[in-house]
Amino acid sequence: MLSKNTRTRQLNGTCTSSVDMELFLHYSLIPSLFIILILSFLQRREHRRQRDDTSYLLGNRFGIIMPLDFVGTFSNRWSYGIAFGATANKVMFLFSEGYQPLQIPQWAQALQHSHSPFELLIGGIEVGLSHFPFFACLSSEFQLVSSILGFCYSLIWFAVTVLQVSQCPHGQFVGKYETLMFYWPSLLCLAFLLGRFLHMFVKALRVHLGWEFQVEEKSVLETHQAEHVKQLLRTPRPQEKKKSWFQTRIYEWDPCFQFPSRMIGTIVLAFICLYLFIVIEFCVFVYVRDELDVFENKLESYITFTNHSGVLTPVILQVKELISVTKGVWVATILPASLTCVSYLFHILVCYRKHIKRLWAGDKLFLPLKFHNPASSASVVAIARYSGWQIAYVLWGYLIIHVVQSLCGMAIMYGLVLPIVHNQGLEMLQGLGIGILTISIVVGLMILQMWIAASFFLQPKLGTADKQKPLALNNRKAFHNFNYFLFFYNVLLGLGACLSRLLISCLLGTWLIARIDRTIMQNGYEGADMGFSAWIGMLYVDHYHTNPVLVSFCHILIANHKEKKLQQTTKYWCLNQSAVPSDLRPARRGEPASCSSSELI
Image (cartoon, rainbow, N blue to C red; front, side):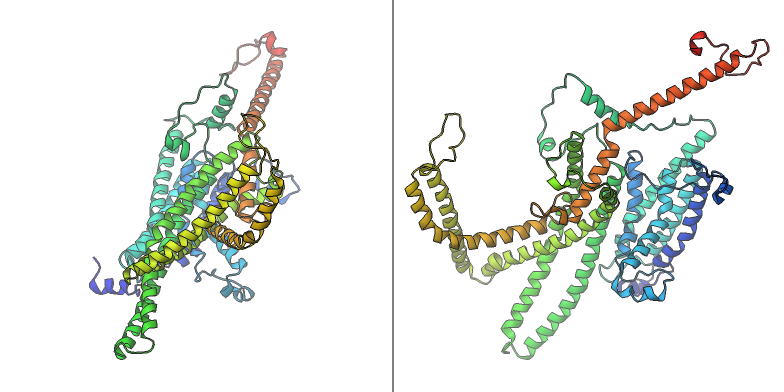
């Protein structure tokens, strides 16, 4: 139990923990590099160097360690996703102004206050290196050793994080359990990784002791990819069952499709980063709210001092009302802005499956024309950018959507609610009625023009089955008079249409800013949308490397090659055995007794 003075210091923001998470991040590189060296020593290189190369002295040891396959990994997906989730706090930590590597040169210190790309690059590499053992131990083929190393490394991070939370659980913004609000997602992910590595250790130990058989070599072709190809080749096609409303409008599960580990990790990390971003935003709001409360108290003191007779009293009352309304609207719009971004994350998965399936079918009509044949180098860079950009777009999108929704809420408050509060409901209804009537007249005149054009200025249908009249003018003299007199009115109407176009573009652009799967640029300018370009390049890389038909073809080639190689090895062994008399040949366990003539052909 914490003492009363300790809790008071924590709530005042004066609690100091014995663990500095920033310093621990720096020193965690030591065990991280140690684990990487061990796994690299165990990893054998497939192609050895020549004798004149200095690396020949290493033999075939110290192979390259791969954290995970960003393109073709479909197994262990949620473990990789949770490992990405464990990095969420450090990803958000990169955005803090307090980040600085342990030792940076003086010329780099000059760029520190500007958050230079060089500093962010060093920070990103350091965070990636400190969390590299999580992914390397999950993907290593030496599961007995990697599970022990991964468990120990995860336990270190878990213990340090628990120590940080237990020593200073409270904060000065949210209050009680503020630190726990920041670190519970990482603690949950680290606890999952501890259980995962423990499960890997038990399974690897049973295999090592001979209690279980070793899993056969993993095939290039995944099960869901094989099922997809079978479904394509199945004739006749099975009749589709009637889909429910949820399957038609929202999502339908497909047993022949799986999302790659990269997409699962991106979505998990985006969820946790979005949660942390909302918590940080709320802490900033609490700080600003407290400062505004102090400012309001000063304004209240001025009103009391002047006995409500000062010249600035009406203005001060309006300012206090504005502050009060702004605070209320900002808090009220946190939930809808959050739900909007959460729905976008789920919708991104839906769009990914829809787009990649259309590419598998050879359909590129949903893509702009300039993206039908993108550059290969741009696609490779795009798949490296996508995950990070997707998370950044979601975070910035939440903030922008929150601001826009707050502005809309302010407009509703000042346009509808506050007039009723100030007993000005009749005036408000009168202005609202005039506005609705004006818009109705404008829309009615536009509909009237369409009706007149369809009724009097177009020739009759050529056939009864035609859905609309042909584009052939009728009553030309009346049409030219109609066009002349409406010319001047349409000039004024065009001003309003131009403003509405600008307003709708701004609303849709800000509303869809987090949607990286679709561009907000106009037709012909899609290349300027770097986020959409990254999305398209990522789709093409996945299309060329995980297309079920292509992977199935490669699987057949590899299987045939192995079969031919096995037949050649068996033929060579039988020829050697036939050259020695059977009575002089020593019997070996596991060898065939004799070779038939068919094996020698």
